[in-house]
Length: 317
Ligand code: SER
Image 1 (cartoon, helix red, strand yellow):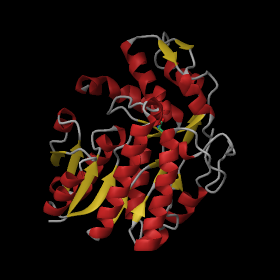
Image 2: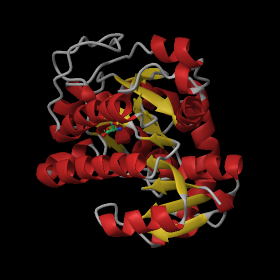
Image 3: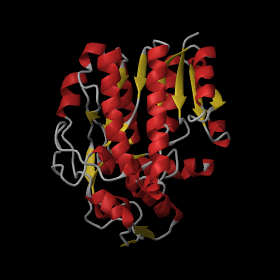
């Protein structure tokens, strides 16, 4: 039986993508792996395995024995966590990607998915409607690793025909996992605080706009890109992808409609500099033209959906 391997399945994106892939292909065809055994317990609808992506022998063995034909390589150290241990972040993010690309070549896999990010952009990038092709001088180790990773993806596609596909996600907002060390994760945490009846302290300024996306849109984009015929995927570094942009004040206002007593204060820390180096909004016209990308959720709709679902889901954390 041919299988899809998900690496880093228990993270923010993996928690939801694993379910979508299992629904599409059947749980028997999907292996969710993560370094954290406890976090794998939620995947009772597909195969699971504990896997450390840095243990190359173990990864190779799994690919061989399970006849893996597609890999979703989602394991990464994110922006804020990466700044605390830059060399480790570089090693984990880069070594693991190169190893997966090598395996894809060696085992002639069908397709590889690897997420990139708005973190590939930097302070000299045009901030509004950031184009697909422009100056990119990222100044976080996470951003540098994503930029280098994009170059490697395109290289493996061009030189070896590895069908690797990628999206530059904006900040992803979902309620099925806890914030995971990203700069945009304040916009996940804020809903938890509102529901718990607590005051929220934002580590970004009130007016700090960032590109964001609700998780169902991110899952749809990922599935659509992976299902697109090979020739329609014209960009082999990574596609710009956009949905909404908002500031801490705007997301707070959207929550206050439902929780009138909710309160916020602003205490910017080192993450403000990271946010300042990223775009306010993204031009994703290539994704829209090449494989028909279209988002569904605006801020109001996202907030209503999260506030309706998170309270019940919180018991899982
Ligand atoms: N959401 C990520 C972060 O903030 C960016 O890709 O690190």
